[in-house]
Image 1 (cartoon, rainbow, N blue to C red):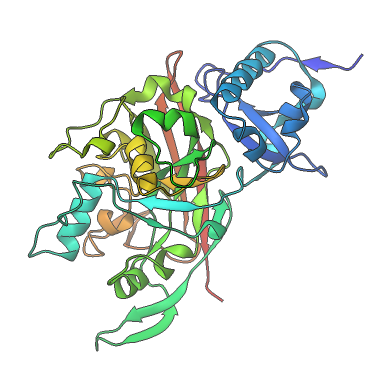
Image 2 (cartoon, rainbow, N blue to C red; image 1 turned 180 degrees about the horizontal axis):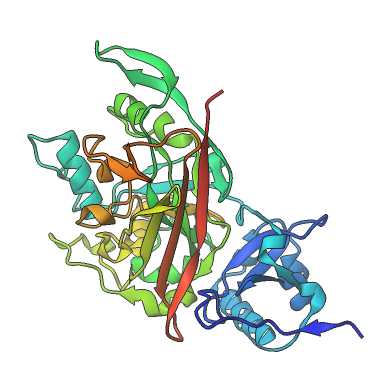
Length: 392
């Protein structure tokens, strides 16, 4: 008879039975497979549930089954985890390699924080209105580069690009104003057909879960190239995604109403349910906490983002990723980018005794987050970590 074990979990671990985030992991010397986290362990779902659907290098085969299957599997995982599991199904998190959890088809980044958009508008247009006329009428976004979304822990090479010089003409070289953007990503599980918009009330039928995102930004490259079409090389070099995807159902206790929206959105953008989320992000720069952005202040909900993304009939596919844009609050200690924290480089941060503005080679940024858990206490979203390496 094969040996069996019971996983013991500390009450405040953040990864209890009410959470159970998914990942793709590799035990030593073995192929990738899908797992679920409980405490400091990963449960091999192919072994624990005796289901080959989880002996896969991504979550996509599972996600494409749709919300009924997602809920059934979540309940099966919870039931199995409450009992003794086959020893072969249990691995320590520190002993496995974590891969990118999804095969990403398309990546869209939004600009959904009123505090962030207002702060950037004041910096970039000091003599004008901080918000452009369309901002309160639609969730502004742009299509990113899916091929450069990397799993947490992957080093980020400082990007090259054109930068404006004092003479007004460009030169070419490594970014001097490399920044972070603390964001929340939403993973599409069930896709939609071309020509068929997704209504705000259908959000949970299509979105599988959430994961932290750091959408790195080269502000000097972005500032020069961003007119008139917007982000390109200043954003496309790397986007870091957590290895852990939290199921939407795990965030049921975190759901809250959105802040007031004025003017009232057009009918296709009116939320059919409360999809604000009470999530607090923590930004650590070289192990020093520099900001705690509050997702609860986001102006546009993820349901509105998805509705707008598909309003023109654009299709979605299993594994598509869309992100919230920088999460920021009203105070300096709640801003989700160094551009805001340092106010465009004019107000340095004291980092471990040194005055700093933007990222230097060797710097490491770690994003973590917590949210109310269904059973009380708080769950911990999987971290997203990245270190800057010197441009070649």
